[in-house]
Length: 103
Figure 1 (tube, rainbow, N blue to C red):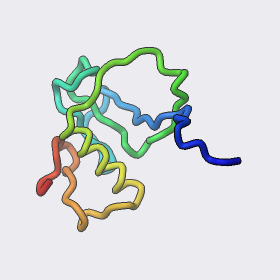
Figure 2 (cartoon, helix red, strand yellow):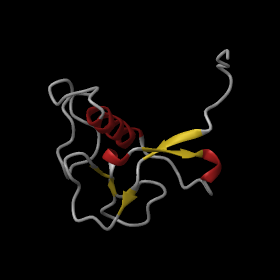
Figure 3 (tube, rainbow, N blue to C red):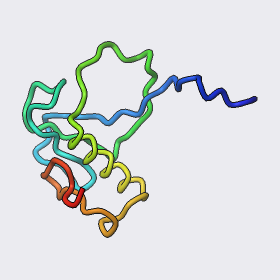
């Protein structure tokens, strides 16, 4: 079958988040307060639990992450998947959030 590049995927990748955790682990990222869609503080994005979800299962739009938070999360995911090491780009230490230094 020929690939149709105009056809959009039926899934998205999601990272589960929780405000119940005490602190993020080494594979996770703390979401800064004030991000759209989160009404509690101390939210942890469990970046090691990246998983596909059907777009049709999404009920409503809650907001989007600020660019600095999104970049930090993308870098943590890339590190978790083995695409980056701590030597490539300095990543936020566990419990820190925001853009990694040097970017």
